Length: 188
Image (cartoon, rainbow, N blue to C red; front, top):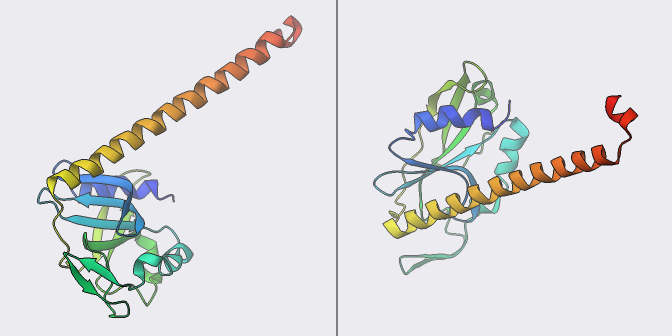
């Protein structure tokens, strides 16, 4: 199973028609696999894990290390034990249903677990195994939401143009190879 196989059930679970769901977004010191921005402007991060080793490796990321930081002008010193995620109001791990039993013991406090059950390759449903604790994250201003959506929009088009360019380049190579081939090689 690939991480892409979990995205459609997650998008359905988090109501993609009402909320904004953005893949691969930089947020609070890390890259989130999926970010849900609610109509109210609150952000939920979803980290997709498809293997036990991948799940354990996530726990070593910098985003889980407490560090000195400012939130709304108030400084919290490093070592306070507080995990710094000022814009993430909820955090979930989303995993294939058969991986839930192998959850690491030391998951970040307050993190939730979503089990994705597959009915076939792309459709399935999500079960909330462990709810995420809602934190006192700040609400995003509309201009911040617009900026995130704009970044996603521009990134998507850059990827599309790169894909098209690659397809054109491959076609040119095939056409060039064909042009250099003898009639006997073409009829082959």
